[in-house]
Image (cartoon, rainbow, N blue to C red; front, side):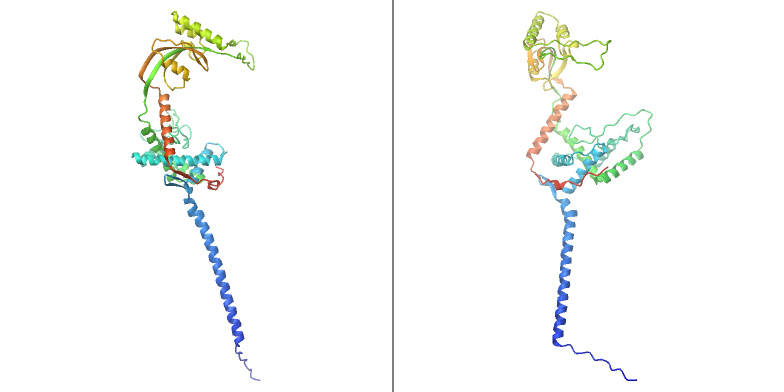
Length: 401
């Protein structure tokens, strides 16, 4: 058998070597190019992730006296607002308007926190826990009956803005005891719903409760010097109403023959009302009894049966200015001439007057609220606030809770 002759490799020519080197260089450049493109794409993706998950949430939606309100905190608060609305069984009809209101509230909270720090006002963890227990109707110091209705942590009942104290109902004495274990179970359920519905953690919610307590303490501090006493008069009056055009009788859907019809008041012009008021004033001057004439003639159905008695009242308690000015211009025992207001002509008699009488609760509350509101308005005016709000700052559409 013939011996096989092995083929010897041909020696690479210079031309072939040049082509090979060019191919290798092209492949190397292609790989470097692809690698560079991959790195660029990776950097773009990474930058987008960092922007969305790190940088964007930290961007300020507003700056208050140099303190930033981050987008992350703002969106969490907006979702909480939507969550509260849904929990109360109401639709989120105006997400944008609600979101803008949330920003205003967060700006106010920042201003109030600054003021609390300046005044040395603080809130302890024990106070926060106590307020939360109060919201859920659980009281440690006394046996707590089980609430007759589900506590509403979102309800408000404090006199300061944005409070979160829920009113609790009074159960029957034999109600099942509301134990600490039951409270903790309800609280756990609520915080889980809160996390799912708004993304807000228990720590976040405790911060909201802390803000509410700081507001309450600031309210007390700001309004501590609001007077609780003031000048007051005890007065009676007779109202002679002007009735033009003539009042129309009110028809009932089904006439009741057994019912006594209320007579329709006769029309009365301004001149006629003034003439009657002057005649009554003359009868009073002649010595007739004020209470008797008030019962007979006064068109004020709220006081006529009591002889026109209005009780004690102070200035700025809701009386029309003309009436108030006339009443406080009189001394005890004096009777005014007819005083014209939007209701008609009044004859006023002051029975008593005191310069430092205890004001009623509602008047004191109104005065304190007005003082606090003005103080807060002044804070806003003096603050340096930069808003960076825009539609893209809104979180996604509210979830169906």
